[in-house]
Amino acid sequence: MRERGQPGLLAQVRREIRLRHYSQRTEKTYVRWVKQYVKFHDFRHPAELGQAEATAFLSNLATHREVSASTQNQALSALLFLYRNVLRQDLGWLDGIVRAKRRTRLPVVLSPGEIRAVLARLEGTPRLLAALLYGTGLRLGEALTLRVKDLDFERSEIRVCEPKGGRGRVTVCPSSLAPNLGAHLVRVKSQFDLDLEAGGGRVELPRAFARKSPTAARDWQWQWVFPATRQYDHKESGERRRHHLHETVLQRAMRQAVRASGISKRATCHTFRHSFATHLLESGYDIRTVQELLGHKDVRTTMIYTHVLNRGALRVRSPMDAI
Image (cartoon, rainbow, N blue to C red):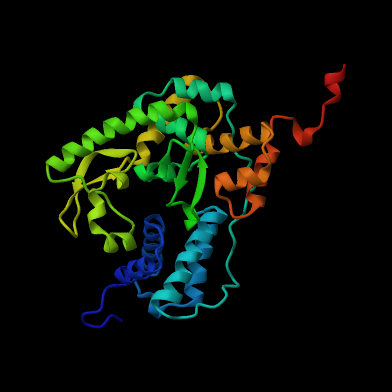
């Protein structure tokens, strides 16, 4: 039980996550799973629970909620973090978990013609952002958290400094997008100057860097490439800040564009990343290069795209084509 003056469970979870410099997305995800775990066991403190209760919760995810294997593994990671790093307990190996079935799904890939059709039905910032996803292979979250300093037009490079998994990388910046990106940054700079004049102009910084150089929050190089349309008041500091564009802005626009183009595939923002990788392989680039551009730790993850190359199943030529 919590002693007087000791922070609550969720506050402890957040503190331990931040000490390890995990991403904000990981923090939100782990906190959400801890909340669900506590609620599942009638709001008993996890210190009073153990291996049996954790196993029951994770098994319920598979048997009753029918979550995917990746979702169940995400919940498992959150519980292991809770017990090991917050409660300082060894949960042990959870042998009795009913495992969610892992399904192998081939990625949805759009043809170049379908890419053009979707982009033609997008306008403004959503169109530029969608083109950037296809032209770079970035995940949506990676594109939205790009800062001005991450764009290098002279070298045609984009530095991905806050990626999934924490492994920074460099990817290509399409030359064809450079003029539109440059014009976009001019507009963003004008808005930034107005924010500064009004006493705002601050952005959220990486936690360690924010302590080291707090004034950088008002530097142009640290501003978001795709800022939100509205500012907000930061609760802890009271500062007037501008966050990056919310992911739902492009997600909604993408759904409408796919529907309007008449494409029957289940295409999402992430489909641009799949298409980027597949089209590079079709163009003859080696798989190791594609792996580096995508930021995959294991080349086996990248290998999935070899199964959707536009060369027929297993590269076999059907005998029907010879008739």
